[in-house]
Length: 232
Image 1: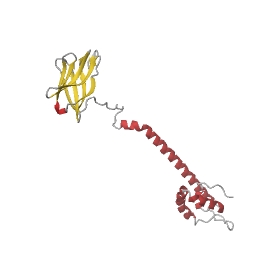
Image 2: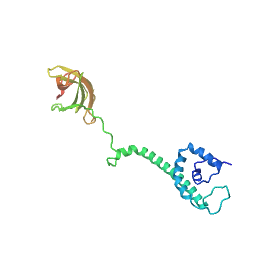
Image 3: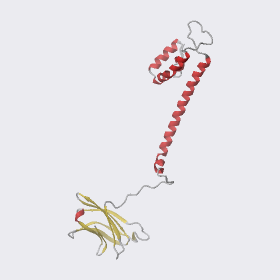
Image 4: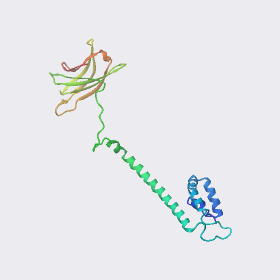
């Protein structure tokens, strides 16, 4: 009676150990199984090498010659060992891939050789063409960044060493003396860039003046007085 066809029948089929019904069933299975066809190709050389081995005892008439029992056991052990090796290799590969995925971020941050991860660089508040100045009288210091645009000039601004409370605004002054307000703000106590409040004021603004039309920027106190002039 024919038994259920399995992948492990490749060795028995290559050595002619299957009965007629089982051989036909395996051949039908072989047509749709690429794994068995590949393994059968590997077993072909072994089958040819064993084809000339005399059996230990004569087989009854009509029965195919069978290799000695130790050879059959050797083939079966080899198949079982190969299957175990494939399972172990697959599991190890999956585990390594998972470990690499989990460690990916850490690997990327330690390639520089530092023991500690470096924080990502912070975006600078000032972009474009930079100009800086400090007023000797008020002590205020500031920096502007200019980016020329089709519509005018994009402006980034930083102000420090200013004590509050104050209300101020930034003006762009053209080469002809025309003034344009870029933006205004309130300076609370104690101020910006001073003891107790070390962070500077940062802001973004714009003017319709082109870069070539601007001669300077001025920080003006509401109600009168100039804290800082930044020539550009």
